[in-house]
Each structure stands twice: as C-alpha cells, then as structure tokens.
Length: 83
View 1 (tube, one colour):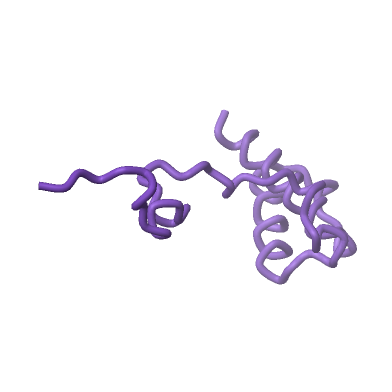
View 2 (tube, rainbow, N blue to C red):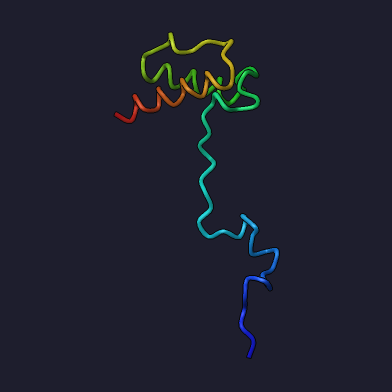
C-alpha cells in the first residue's frame, strides 16, 4: 500500500480552479479597473438612468461618465433603494 506524499503531488493540486473555496475576486474597486476610464457601457447607461429616475435623483445621471464612475453611482443608487 502506497501513501500519497507532497513529493508526488499532481500539478492539478495547485490549480486555483479546483479550490473548493476560491478567494472572491468578483468585487473589484472600480478605481482599479483597467478599463475604468472608458465610457460607460450601454447597459450601465440604461441602468443608471432607470435608477436615477426611481430614486428621484436625475442629477446622478450624465451621458459622459466613465465605466468606473457609472459603477460607483449605480452602487450608491442601489443602496438608496435598498434602504
């Protein structure tokens, strides 16, 4: 009977995709986004417009926002709606 030791570990053992509890990297600060200075996306434009209307804060909507700024405003408006 042979036992498994670290010297016989498979390269797959170090594969982060096989980690049952991977670190959460889905929440990244918009200031750290590589494309954060790009114009906001169409989806962001639509969502931000809707949220600014729902919260009665039309001043939070602007056509010329960056992706990062739009994301920050969307998060703030969502927080206002949540309570």
